[in-house]
Amino acid sequence: MSHRFAAVDLGASSGRVMLADLSGGPSLTEAHRFANGPVRVADRLHWDILGIYREILAGLRAAGPVSSVGVDSWAVDYGLLDESGRLIGNPVHYRDDRTRGVPERVAALVGAETLYDVSGLQVLPFNTLYQLLTDRLDGAATMLLIPDLIGYWLTGEVGAEVTNASTTGLLDVRTRSWAWPLIERLGLPARLFPPLRQPGEPIGGLRRDVAGEIGWSAPVRAAGSHDTASAVAAVPASGPAFAYISCGTWSLAGVELPGPVLTPQSRAANFTNEAGIDGTVRYLRNVMGLWLLQECMRAWPGSDLGELLKAAAAERPFAAVVNPDKPVFLPPGDMPARIAAECRRTGQRPPASPAAYTRCVLESLALGHRRAVRQAMELSGRDVEVVHLVGGGSYNELLCRLTADACGLPVVAGPAEATTLGNVLVQARAAGLVSGLEEMRSLVASSQPLRRYEPSGDARLWDEAAARVF
Ligand code: ADP
Ligand code: LRH
Image 1 (cartoon, protein in one colour):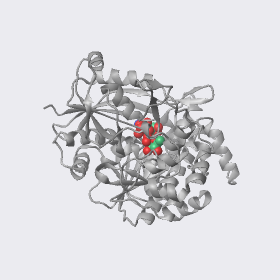
Image 2 (tube, helix red, strand yellow):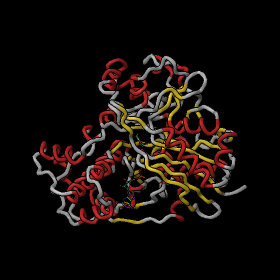
Image 3 (cartoon, helix red, strand yellow):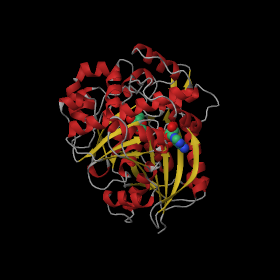
Image 4 (cartoon, helix red, strand yellow):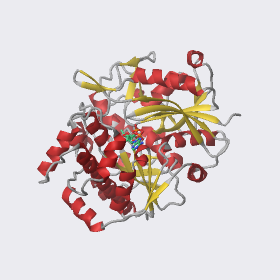
């Protein structure tokens, strides 16, 4: 058997097909990377799902033959299939505002406490259940989350991988099976929800037409198909005393636990209990993430990330900070204007240059990281000695340093491609090449470049800044 595995990793800002060689410590090659993002059509934001699929096929062709293929992507979004298995409509982007008012209506119908007790999920306006309640479901036979939809197109097999299913709001957090009584109470048709599959489970072989198009064939296996589940599986931690921040378009910040925390305090803090690999719970909160900077840069045509970060490092600290998690920052649009408005609203002078905005965004994110890590520790009782920051954000030295200072904890940055590593290591484990989570993590720690940032600076300045925004 070859030790080559392919990961299709679809992030909100870019998709990639990565090739991993596991004959030594995992070594990664990027077979193909392509831009991803929302497409507005009239009053609706979509994903360009067929364009994404075309790029996946191009990536698999470039990768060449492998032992197996795994697919992961961002959570919550889905495609609907009709009776004959054809896609109905074009999947809607989670930043679309079609669910406005729906979480409140559902809470009034079912009770916010009941909802949290069943699913353990934080309330985000785009959770799958809210989206489904706004959708036309009459002609729909099956709902497939994005990685399951791609898996279906590659193999012809339907199913719902459990880590991503846990972001729907319709999975029972205790039993990890579909929450049928809740589904019924919400009036959602049971036929929509396909059988669940576990990370590592075989999905099927590539369809003949797909194999013909890419020039080779291989089995497809379920990865931890929620990108964050794969990323957390590849955090290079040893022992349990760590927090993680999976930092890309979003920052997903929290701790890994053996079971859910469903207390009223946890619900009030809007912490989520998402399903991790091997029955673990990803106890975390969504922090708005580098979306803030991506969206600023869209408003500054020609800007260069490296230059902006260099200039931001020289800017005056704490000139202006915002709560990064304000819902006003969620949709696409003029981000600098929204940040300026938030600064004014909180009695601060808005940043005056792209470098100053960048500084503001990174300090604000560091504050969001600090709040999420501290609350995760408090609410779960878990001790944390180190924060692992993985994902594209781990390249951002200023953000890593600010996060260490804000949290008052060491930050170990990297790997940037943790999601891919988690995806392929779960496949490798299913093939018998790796034993379990612990070995997966130690393989990552010993093979990938990591940087450590010790906390420094005056902690009181962070306390003051936090008091300004939260
Ligand atoms: P996603 O999976 O959500 O698309 P990624 O994990 O790929 O996100 O992270 C993308 C982010 O990583 C970019 O928005 C950017 O801010 C950051 N990033 C990527 N490369 C670099 C780099 N060389 N230096 C600093 N930041 C980087
Ligand atoms: C990160 C992510 C996150 C979800 C969001 C919709 O890519 O999967 O975990 O909350 O996208």
